[in-house]
Image (cartoon, one colour):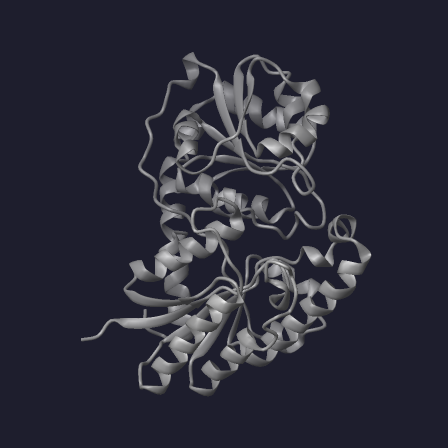
Length: 370
């Protein structure tokens, strides 16, 4: 019996060894489809590479090879601007392929990666003349999605309120947040006889703000923090954060396998990194990385990460105030057993949120094969 086949589409080049969310997610989903039994034909790379992949798959389809579905993940850029020089050299390539697949009865689901272009941060970081090109093309993508997709996957259903001008597309919306890996369980240390150890990995500028977190932590003698971020971001932000540095706060720049020793070291992870309109809908992939390592976490209430933590009882979702942060840290320090009591719950929630579970959902939605 031949193996089930599916098509995996990314309209841009990605670094298969990259560690940012935009690189991690597609690689993990690609692996997950393979793990649940699919032979995956992928379309990715710059335009010429994608064209070659598309022509090969089209030929397969014309010769009777069957694919259960096409799963795509959008770029952070408009589809037409994903070349190295951001010129639309292949304007009909990707959506033409979608149309071909649809014509041949292949259902299509797409994960919509980001909606920063709808927020002030985009206007602040992108020049007006570039926005004059990019924003109409973001809208063009959404119009095409409405016509061609069977499923429009979002990291948070809260995103829908920013796309109300696309009712047909929103009728196809469904939830597909990041997933996690089941990382080998790590040995715990005795918090009662040592300091509480906290780990944060991720951005520290623009979207994410660690100032309040560092300010509060600097007041505690009996806890330690390792903050992991890009070196460039630390250089840009150390004037803000430097005033809160103590010997108990360590800054590191690591990625991939290098992070494992810090997860092994940590008792607790931080998702308490600011608030605001964008944060209220964003679901950082690091929350699921923390979950994969079975680490309880502190998040901000009224953010998507905070809601996930609260609904799943895997940490503390608190108001974005110094008082609330101090209170919960004091509670944990005074009674470290609260962390141990979350262990079983973390395992259960992790099992429900593995990358393979995300892949199974897509296969069930689009091919009903799981």
